[in-house]
Length: 482
Image (cartoon, rainbow, N blue to C red; front, top):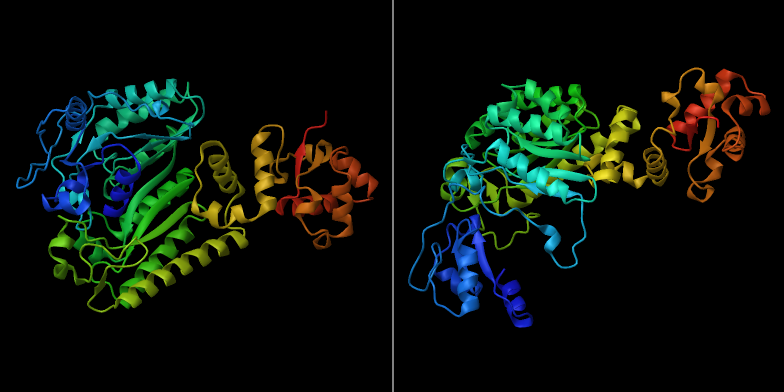
């Protein structure tokens, strides 16, 4: 960070100010370390403007939360942050509208997870009213010119059931006027006690949710203060899958509390079991422990069986651990993460290759990617690497309602609809096809299924088998005869 600040101040003429949650534990020594023009501790909606106005006028003003030489400062918390002007991204130079629309509905956290900066350092939970949240969303949607992906940033979105239900009702009404879908973080401990909310959230447009998974070992989750068990997480996954949620994401900490070869094996097994419960839905990720200042793990790592080799994280960019455990060395923690990722990746590929992921789920992932810019793990690492598949779903979604897949056709349509070849011949190896399949593709675009069967002297059963095979391999779609 110091090097970046030095470069910016050398090549550009503007102020560099540090602020936000990470300043909570900063002191006057950080003024020298970072060489910033100022450090404003805390939430800066008011203090930053006061500081900038004073600089512009050439005045020496000490604002609340500002660190000065030989003088520390208190962290500034705002009790009511709903009164400030809404974000106006479109005022940024060279602004190009993107799908993401981020909204913060609360600050602080009532939970005290041992690894979490917010839980370890925040003041009381301060929640905006449902009306304030909905008014902001509507105001920003009115200025938008494209479909949006509404991203609720705070990890306490599901904390208050009364407020949550009001927001869900309002979001559902807004979706009648505006084209958007949404994401939030949900706490599995809350959701398992209020399973009915999952259906309501999906019905109001939620297409992706994140829940904390952290570990497959119950004792580890208790040590973290997670307030959720592996069984709670499993139940939430089952309900989300049954309710049709397109994407559920979760993160596992590798090399965390009391990690051993056995806990890694248990966590891996539990993650694979979850994938088996919900093929095509789960988007799993991993991270190493980050000893963030103020957290229990930072203050008392030995309490969690953790040895911090680099407390300040100077050697870490989130791809290499700064700690090991009593039973695992740094290389063993790295290897554990690699093995976990490989096992999860292989399971995902196996599910796809064995046809365990429904076509409806695959199409939903492509629709979210094309329309809202949401690319989940299955799409990024499996579907998106198949050029035929990408072209196939792009056509299906672009011409929604005018094209169908084979499994969607009625018995009558399986005779009267026209075969449409999707990929250009240059995209595939023609030698992988039988002569009959080549003949079908060559005549696609003009003949109905019945006419094609008649020309090639094929029974309805035989043409059906061939077209299903071509459809399953993303070669053909079908359109009504006009």
